[in-house]
Length: 534
Image (cartoon, rainbow, N blue to C red; front, side, top):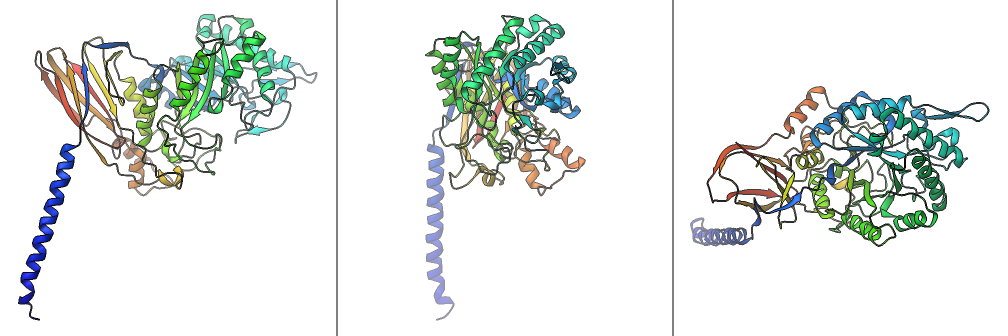
């Protein structure tokens, strides 16, 4: 067959292909156009009251002794400045590396608070307060040798509950003398950590309640206005039982505390060896908080405060979701769902300077922190920084994934996000999924409209967190995921993910006309639009 005889057939084939491609493009374009745009419409004058700032009431840290490190203190001062957390809670205040308690040769208690003083004085110097977790057991007071973590926190009950009570009384008296009654009245004292887990408490529920009773009596013996609570359990456990015990036995309780994490199985795995899977339940974490509030409301003490003294997407400091850009939108989604149900939601934790499994050997290892060990801002950090940049007055808003506020001076702030759980399901652990380069798909655009905003000039700044936007981990992947970072590499990652606005402009809003802006958004993007009145 000659070459020329093939040409008509080829032309016919090419025409079919072109028509098919054009038709497909037209259909795709039609689908894109017809997709309903997300809309955030608010009225500058329609307010719901003061913004609920429970999100920045408290933040977590690993253990007290880590708080004696210079880099830990530098990072906390930075996080305080940018995110404005009021309280900080940490493990290990009474463990032997804090040198709090020993006994002389005759068994008489010897107390020492020099290490605690250094730590708490620093907190005071940067305007923070301790959410005091009373644990773990000093070795000289412990009934056994069972410990947890690399730093060996003793988790056994006291061998002498009277000596335990005397220690707590002496400690609280010391706090009162050093910081004053009015200051200590503003603190919280939480007895122990996760006593419903065998790893954290070698006793029974009954023995925990006994531990709590002696601690509560010790605290109230110094000042009846000092606040004490518990049980600080994993998985929102023991709440009705705790309240019932206190009511039946006339034991003081001022708040309920517990913990929740957003993965489907387990509670304790500092090495991440068992693997985790982000829960597909859209109300994971937040559903626990709402249930806790219901249980308190139905109890004999319906007005108790509720503090979630630990929460995050995952309970292990070896889960790469903590480093991922997905974590920022996850944080905002859960806090929005919780609403006013909790008095505080203490994110666990502010820094990767965290040694439960021992010191870590790589720059990004799935640590809990808002910052890496070397002080690199993770996407999760920006979730809290953006929240802290909101105004003090919230505007009425029907959109479920945004917060709109204004300040007393007329500035306006719009914080919006998309949370899409892209995890493929139970067949893949977080430890395999979130270490990947995970490009985000488009979610179309969001129309923001603010009606009745006063006429005038406004400085517009728009900030973004998402895939390759203030996404330090993906930057780390792009340079080859080195086991150790040079000083130059650390500075480059910081510079590339420094939180600068990606749009800055001046706009004039005319009288009687709304301000409107259309914003592109992808899966798990977080956007902050700031309007500063000039």
